[in-house]
Image 1 (tube, rainbow, N blue to C red):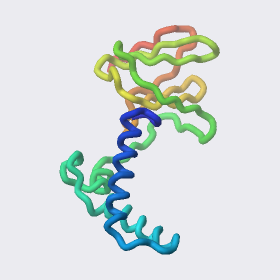
Image 2: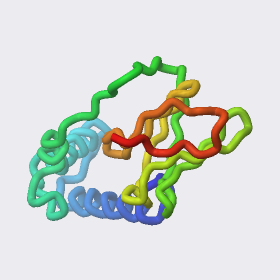
Image 3: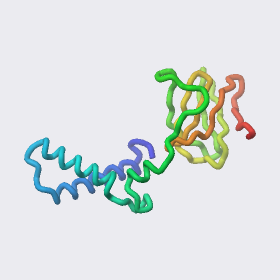
Image 4: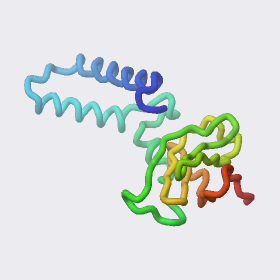
Length: 153
């Protein structure tokens, strides 16, 4: 979900409700340091001690550590030398990208329609990555062509 999206806001509101409920069952904090200690205890429990129904009864930490972490491949990108776009692949399986005032369409495949992605752009080098780090496509933009078709494996 995107920031400020109703679904995201609902998740945050639900988290705040859980935190407030937990705090009401604790002894009142009389100092900021005591409150911080309670919040630290809650955070540790929330992330490492509490099994979550949507995560197959695993804790958030267990779910996070179980997934392999994304590692960039191909041409390295240098910090500050690229731009990042948050986008969603359209219903036809395409992304649009403006380069030098010209709109280009990047074929991603209909199987990815509706997927939220990050588009990493460095000059003509483009990487399309899912929000959980899976590389979907890496290409060099052909600035003379409007449509950038998928390459055959």
